[in-house]
Length: 115
Image (cartoon, rainbow, N blue to C red; front, side, top):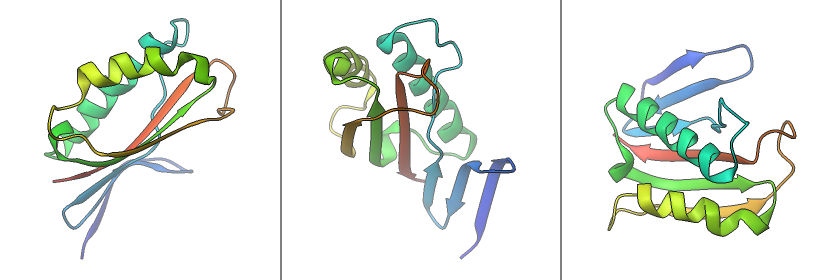
């Protein structure tokens, strides 16, 4: 099967398509001056854009990994996630508390989707 990489950088590709499966790199917010809810909204918009760029969308999510810097913000993040995710097409999902790559990042999300 063919592997296609998009937005290729020296360390990672932002999107990799293998067969009928789309893999996104972990996404973080561009504007980190906002709280967890605002960062989550930004990340989900980025996910929408990256999936659309290869012909997929959130209704085709297979799995999602979410990292949050502090679990006390879990409900705030989930409120944004729940409003965004396609009803009836929710992916398998894990969420863990973790120290992220830089202290300004409060949320990181990585998804796998079908085409």
